Amino acid sequence: MIMRKWATPLVIGSSVVMAVTGLLIFFRLDSGYNKVVHEWIGWAMVVGIITHGLVNLKPFLNYVRKSLMGQLIIGVFLLVLALSFLPQGEREGGGGSPFVIAFTALTKAPLTQIAPLAGRSVEDVQRVLDEAGLPVADPASSLDAAYGHDRRKMVQAIRLLWAGSGGKGSLGRR
Image (cartoon, rainbow, N blue to C red; front, side):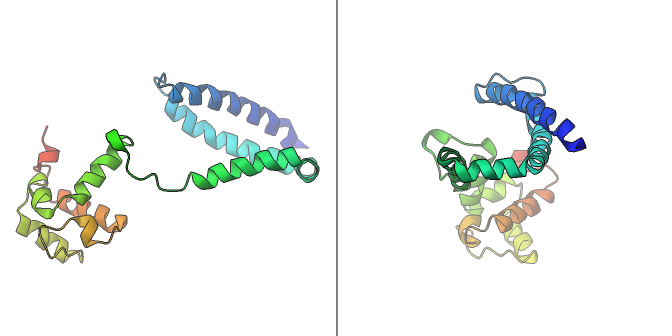
C-alpha cells in the first residue's frame, strides 16, 4: 500500500524533529526557528500518526485489546490530555504568559485606571463601550466584573478602546 511507504518515515522523521526542538524549547535553549519548526512539524506528525494508525488499525486494536499495560499507558496519557484543559488559575510570582498577565491586570482594573492608558477620558470610555453594547455603568468597576468574566466581551472592549486612540494611549507610546 502506498500510504505504508511514507507514513512510517513521516512519523519517524517528524518525531525526531519534535523531540529535539521540544527539548530545546523546554530547557530554554531554542534559537532561530526552533519554536516555529516545532509547531509546524507537529502538523506533519499528526498526519503521519493518523495515516500510520489507519494503515495499522487491526494490529493496533488487537494490541490494545490484549495488553493491560498498553491500555493503562494510553489511559494515563488521555487523562493527562483531559487535565491539560483545566484552567491554571493565577500563580504567585507572576508566572504564566506575559500576555495573560497583562490581559488579567487590564480587565481587573477599574475604568478610571483603564481610561488614561487608552488615552481617553472616563466619560469617553463609557460612551464608546455603551455605543458598542458593552456598557459599564460604574467607572469604579472593571471590565471583568461588568461582563461577568466573559473574555470575548473583554477582548472586544479592549480592542474598541485602543482602536480609536490612534496609538496615543500610554500603552501605544514608544
